[in-house]
Image (cartoon, rainbow, N blue to C red; front, side, top):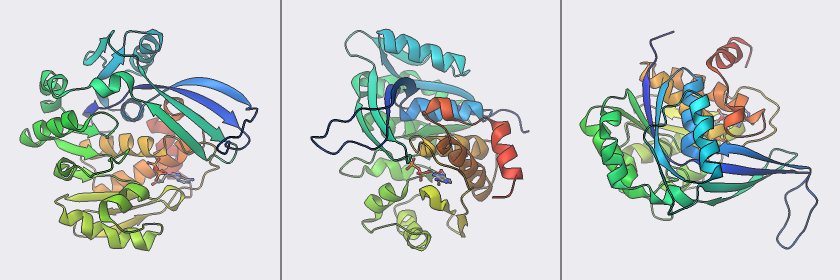
Amino acid sequence: MPSSPRIAVLGSINMDLVVRCAHLPSPGETITALESLEIPGGKGANQAVAAARCGGIVTMIGRLGKDAFGDRLLASLRHEGVCVERILTGTDCASGIAVVAVESSGENSIMVVPGANGLVSRADVESASEIIRAADALLLQLEVPLDPVESAVQIAVDAGVRVILDPAPMPDSIPDGIFNADVLCPNQLEASAITGRPIRTVDEARDAVSAIHQSGVANVVITLGANGAVVSDGDSVDWIEPYRVRAVDSTAAGDAFAGALAVRLAEGARLVDAARFASAAGAIATSRLGAQTGMPSRLEIEQRIAEPA
Ligand code: ADP
C-alpha cells in the first residue's frame, strides 16, 4: 500500500436521527416506525471517516455547537482517527442535525437542519489554510456555505493541491467556483442540474460529461447509484460497472464513494482505477445501515474488488 496521503476535508458535521420504518410516511400520514438511532453523519464528516477508513490521514475543517451532540460528534471523529483540531465550536448555534427516515427497501427521505454548519466562514478556511496547502487532496461538498467552499478551492488550486468536489446538495443556482475543482463528482440528479438535461442511464451520463468538461473541469465522475458510475478524464469516458450488493440503506453511498476516490487519487491512482475502488466502497456502504458506521475499511474494499463483481 502506498504511503498514507493527507486529505483535508471541509464540510458539514451532523447528528443523524435515523428512524427505520416499513414504508416512508406520505404527507399527513402517521406511521409506527420500527426503531430510532442516533448516528454521526453530515456529508463532510461522512467523507472524512470514509477517507480515514481507506487509509488517509484526514483533517476535518468545520463547525459544531457546544452541546451534547457536538461533544459526541467530536469524540466519534477522534475515535475514527480524524484530526479534529480545525473544528471550531461555539455557543451561538446548535450542532447540525439530519432527520433521516429509511424504509425497508433502502429508500430514504432526509431533512437537514444546518445549525453550526451554516456558520462556517471564509475566515475559518483562511485560518486552516496551512492544512489545505500541506494536503495531497482537498475534499469538499456543498453542505456548508458556498463562500468558504470557494475560498478553500482557491487556496488549494493556488498551492497545486488536488481538489475533489462532490456538489451535494446542489443549490438552486450553480456556483461557478465548483468548476475550478480538478475532479467534480456529482450524482445523476446533480449532474442533471449542472447540464440541464435528464441523466437516468449510463448512455445519458456518457453524453453529459463533455458538457461538464466545457465548464472547465478536467475530470468528471457521475455516480449512478445501482448503475455504477461514468468517469471521464477528457480523453476517455469509462463506465464503472456496479458491484452487486443487497442494498439496505443508500444514505451515504456517495460519501463513501467520494472519500475513497479522494484517497486513491491522492495516492496517485489513475481516475478510472480510483473510481473502481470508490465504487466498491459505495456498494458496501449501501449494504449497511447508517452513514459513518457503514463506511467500509480499506481491507473490506480490497476484498470486495478481489471477488467477482
Ligand atoms: P449519492 O449517494 O451521492 O446519490 P450514488 O447513489 O450514485 O451516490 O452512489 C455512489 C456510488 O455507490 C455509485 O456510483 C455506485 O458505485 C455505488 N452504489 C450506490 N448504490 C449502489 C447499489 N445499490 N449497488 C451497487 N453499487 C451502488
